[in-house]
Image 1 (cartoon, rainbow, N blue to C red):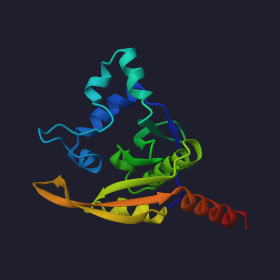
Image 2 (tube, rainbow, N blue to C red):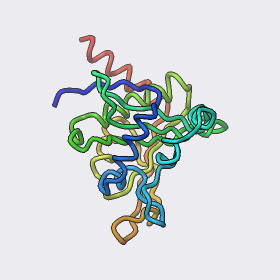
Image 3 (tube, one colour):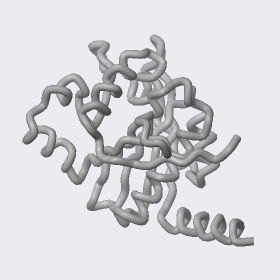
Image 4 (cartoon, rainbow, N blue to C red):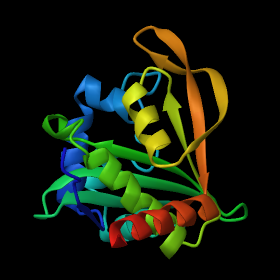
Length: 194
């Protein structure tokens, strides 16, 4: 599979509308944050239906929050295909990363990996964080494999933390440190230089 390339851009109102539509699909919402106990698709950064009609001031307040940074994932051609969410704990210098590729026809084609690579570059090179981590339900084996491939290390398990299809499942916490990211980036650069 060829390595995909993506760009990260500020979220637009049209992007929010697409996210809302994508999350109406059960499979897509389960791959992101799941559903609230009352049944609506969860989105931990904002409520897409509310943000579609938000005032400019509300929009600015939501998307300038330094603890919840969100970006749209776009193909090289500029097509919006997903979203990144950084829940940043500045006092700890770390971020919980979440990624969604909302176009199911693009799943398992390398866009999630490209998006996560771009997220790590932003987290470490732009935001200057010390650590990034993910929380992946045990049933999402593709996401666990992707994060492992990118250098994330298993740090722990949250027991029965994820409701899914009428049952509860463990989720795996995986993390990567800035120094580990830099070492992998340097090794990759050396390999491409040869």
